[in-house]
View 1 (cartoon, rainbow, N blue to C red):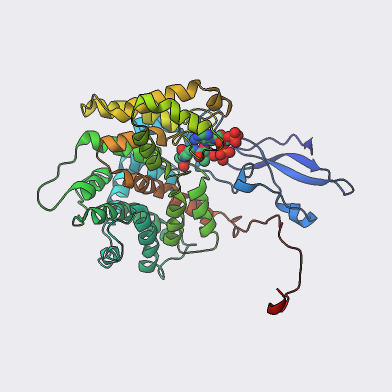
View 2 (cartoon, rainbow, N blue to C red; view 1 turned 60 degrees about the vertical axis):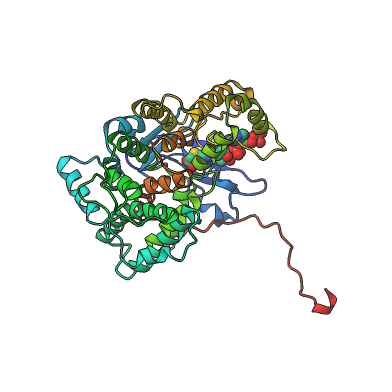
Length: 444
Ligand code: CMC
């Protein structure tokens, strides 16, 4: 493929055709394909029209495919950069609260004080769930994984709010966003309470978003519960660090489902299902369980060897990323937060932290990990913090889902607003039988 430079400059705020690529297929007329430039990152070749020439592109796992245009989040995986609406994740984590980040993702700008107060109030008065919803929990076994419950319960929200949603109406979309942001933490805490056999706790309007979540998780009707500000701050930061991550598997699942015009609550359930896998959001739980299995620093070499062995399915959880080929910038903040939290909680001796630090040190010096650019990702340290602040391991991925709800819904809103959105319908390279005739059953 050659590249015909048209010298058109990239314009800020929208994709621009900067150059034209020319595809030469032997024996056929050259095909011209526009090269689109965004405001940051790699240029992309627009192959939309290729199908009209009788060809499709083949890219399992979307290794080299941009599935949409988006203005929400930018990642430079080589440099380890993550921006939400242009703001670096480190600054957002240090200078803002989770709800400010939610506002930013949803409304495109950081809020001023008045806007934030109004936003908080909208969320606060939507945290309760319909009184029929708690009854659904009774249908689950007590030992159900809370992510299994979340898949079902989030999908069930669509039964409560279906007829009144017009996906094309911005006010309806905003209401969907507010409801989800407010109700998913309530449902997440209920999933935990159900697994513990404890009564559900109603939301408390005088608490912060994060404080209220901790209250619904850990309070009981028997005595007053006081939110620990250190734990509240750590949890809020964990929420910020997981709020969005551009076109990852779960967000793409939400977009895929959303492209059909499906009920948005059902679309979020699709995101929760995709998040659950250990290669994605389930990695935080898998990572902590792995560290518990390793148990002690002296066992690390054995597990490093297993991770490198092609005949062993074991992978070092919390390491590697499809996009980051450098340190995950969220992991850097997470590691600092982890040390901060343990210090503030006076936890001087945390055996898993010793394992984590030594594992990280050894892996970062090992040629296997260096050559493959496998660095710690966000899940490497998050489990230790969550463990230190008393969150049970089975709830780790649920916490991720609570935090990521704003990312999913912001992407869902963006795609509804985008006039170029189409139903997602990938093509395939068929390698099955060519046409054949059905034989009568006696001859098969
Ligand atoms: N441990 C050992 N080897 C690994 C690991 C790992 N964690 N990750 C990748 N590799 C190897 C892999 O075997 C392959 O080696 P080779 O080239 O010799 O065949 C090479 O590195 C490339 O791996 P890949 O599977 O082709 O890379 P991918 O981009 O398809 O997968 C990943 C990315 C995140 C699924 C993978 O790195 C992984 O399974 N990591 C562990 C799970 C994890 O921590 N996931 C959380 C991701 S961050 C949270 C989120 O945003 O979801």
